[in-house]
Length: 323
Ligand code: GYE
Image (cartoon, rainbow, N blue to C red; front, side, top):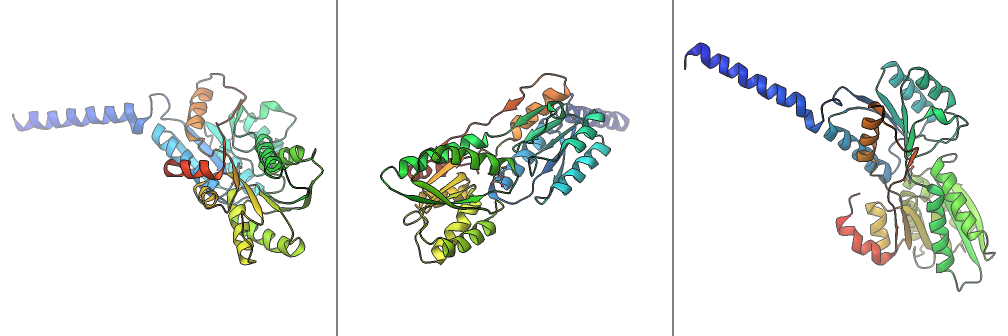
């Protein structure tokens, strides 16, 4: 082969590789590689949140769709600023998990005016204007609270009085509102249950520990702790052990999420029951983004599959648990 031919063949080979790269670009299908999604995350407050972020990032990477990510550190003002910046960047879709339920109308009207569709992931908003978002992909938090209440009623069927401490998630957030409502509705028709206190633990381990420490002094005779996520339950367990008591024995513990650490504590009998909340929303979010940007219709509401766990079920599930 002459030198010139050799160079020509090399150029042709490069072009073929480039073309293949363009068409298959990181597993993306043709027509989606130009998409840019702005994702405004709540923060990094819990293991659930970390698993959720990781899953979303990897799903978008896999799909070859650009994801711009921001962490609001649990502050609504930060999240509003992030959404405004995505509007300015003219992203294809804005997705976000709202820190709290209310106060979104103004910024979402701005997104609407800019023609950028909004998808809610995980948490919900309260608004009178349903046109401000296309769909919500996330759990039914009231149902989760009900499952916790149903278990409590069964567990304490033979007791004559049950003192309950609620360690709630971030005040004003959809999961805190729903999980409180569902639980209180369930136990509300059984007068032996009394809620000695409900305190905001901010969905963090430190928050759970702090609330529990103070509550053990105010209500040392508490029978049941309902922690609205695993991190707060794990913090509460530390406080209970610190006070020389046995979590899961003298004081029963219910939690929500079913993250790996929570499930380990359940397997060890320090937590007694966990209501699962599924953070693996990435693939479904990618599908929604593709459909919405292709002008296809999507359901107004999508709920991920979820279950509950007893100690035996946690032991069985742990080896293959994904988060
Ligand atoms: O349960 C908690 C997290 O919004 C469902 O937020 C989510 C909750 C989750 O911090 O661990």
